[in-house]
Image 1 (cartoon, rainbow, N blue to C red):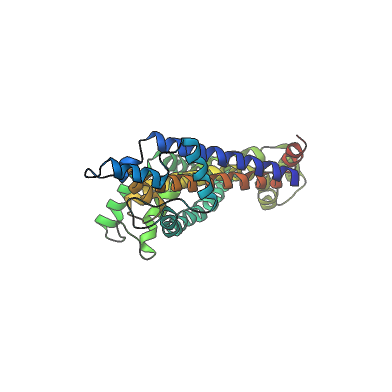
Image 2: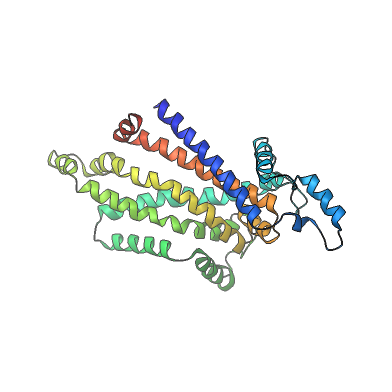
Length: 308
């Protein structure tokens, strides 16, 4: 098992290095960073001074290794449009994004799994059709459209909730709902996995032996079926990271998603690089955690992967 974890850590490190190269290259391909640092009044002497100050006259390979050295020291460079460094901006905004994403994940993931199990147990019932409809609506409806409709109903028409901003619990309700809806895909996965388990031979044998139905469902079938949504959790977190950009912008939530839009519009490449690297690192870590949890949950996979 330790060998498997070490191999996965090595793969994660390779992925991290690949991500840094891609982010660094794409930001440079979007234009010369010097354009954002100079005003129309600046002459060539000023331009040359700024090039040397930020190392922009060096070859790209040297700039990349300098960038990596700074990243490993936790330095992401200054912001050109905010009165703070990129690292300081992320430090301020990250708790807000984690709060929104954490609440959405804590509500949507267990709820989707519970409803998925119940829809499978009550197959072809009204509850089953309702659960499947909820999952389809959650997956198919664009989050920006849901956000606009919810604002119109609960903020503008009824006046129950604020339209935007950060404050008390009431400011969390609408953004959390919008961010949690795409996680409804977990419901369909859980339902399919449970149906496969409930139709399997070992479940039929357990029923013939007279085991209580709740024990068959929750202790035997659920344990095997839970591997599927566990694998999908990293995808759900990826959706939360990408969806937070839209949700935070619509609801004026002061998190990293809103910061990303502001930085992209201002071509503040230090901040864009830092945000992209932060989001990618979170996803790499979540994939790593999911892979390790996956082999712990299923002994057959543990044996196969460790002895591969």
